[in-house]
Image (cartoon, rainbow, N blue to C red):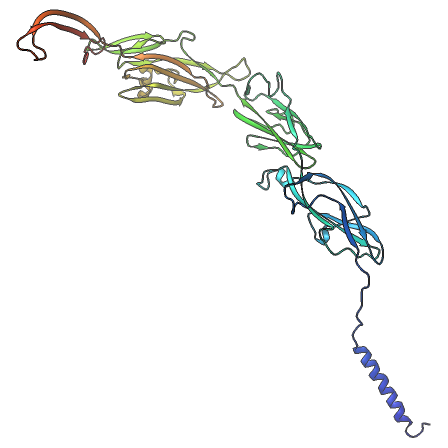
Amino acid sequence: MLMPGSWRSLALVVFLSVLGSFLLSCAKDPLRVDRNRPPQTFLVAAPIDTTITEDINYSYRIHLFWRGEDADGYVVGFLWSWDDSSIGAFQFTTKTDSIFEVTVNDSSQLTGGTGINPGNAKAHSFYIRAVDNLGKADPSLTIFNSRAFTASTEPPIVTFLGGPGMIPSGTVEIDTLCDGAPFQVCWFGRDPDGVVTRYRFDVGPYNSPLSADSCAYFNDPSRPGSVALSSGLYTMSVSAIDNANAVGRNNVQFVVNHDPETWFLPKGAPIGHYIQPYYLGQLVNIVGTFAPGDTVLFRSTVWWEWDGEDSHGGCEPNCLSGWNFVLGPGTRNDFDPYIIGFLDTLSVGPPLIRFNNNDPDRMSQAGFTALILDSLDAGTDMIARVASRDCSSRADGTQATFLFHCNFPPKITGLSVTDTLANPDGLITGDEPCKFIAWTSEDFEDGLATFA
């Protein structure tokens, strides 16, 4: 049985216990103090910081050395990164040196995705952080453990494998290939300070992917990846990419499709035709022919016949799709030019009429009177030019030409000299002995000379 007053003592003990428990439950966690000091990191062999000295470039292949110190433990490894100092970019290593190969272009620049032309130098930053035996990394990135510098390299060199029967052949400045015939262009690359890893080529609208291939095939359905090239002049650019993503280029030009040939008829001894409108001032209708270098009469109507071919020894189909005709220099109808663009069939007939002549009878029959070359103006060294066009729309690059002149000079037909007396200048009184000269003239075409 409890003594009087004992229950009060017990109640006090219980109260104090509960109060103590309550106070302990309300107390905050004691402050935890991290007594582990972080390690320090030092780059002991690295390029000079190019943010301080901007005119120094270093090789893309660089050997870096580093070390770490820990005042209250020891260093177990390092975290390193290139160009990105965010936590997730670092990689762990136990090495204290390494040889790195950095790039001078981003991969997107190699395919033209950035719109920035590839270069031969690029700025980089290297970061290194020591890690101690408790896993704590150097939190700082200072001049002692980070370095900015510019890496540079020599671009690779592309050389085409040319020679007889290859592109380039070396025999002409620009090679010409048969329209639609298969062909290939091959090359090799070398790099002065590295290795070539990939190539790409661009020709016309086609841009190849990056690959190790050193030949490109064209117009060859039997070759996977063959590129179809239609008639035209092409500049093919081949790029070599090395292990630093540096780019070297070389170009070669070639033509697909030989141009057709054109000539005035008869081939080898061409003639022109004319209709003479005047003779000694009288309207006439005299038809004749003339050779290169001849003179036709003023205001004549002239025409030619012409032809062409596009077989080139059988490597192309002999297919012509029209001709154009230009008189230049030279005009008609008081300085009206005669320029006819490419035309082929004028009338399906019968008979079939093609624009392989400008005979006024046939042009009138087909309803193309604007093609009649009439009423020539006077001129010397007038040149008729005609060119064929093949069925791939390539025109003859060396037009057929026919040089001639228009308008004969007038002639003195009579001359007389007689003695007379006259006072032609009025400087003396009376007449003096003089000569009276008289002449007559004619023009072979319109009959008159305007002055002498």
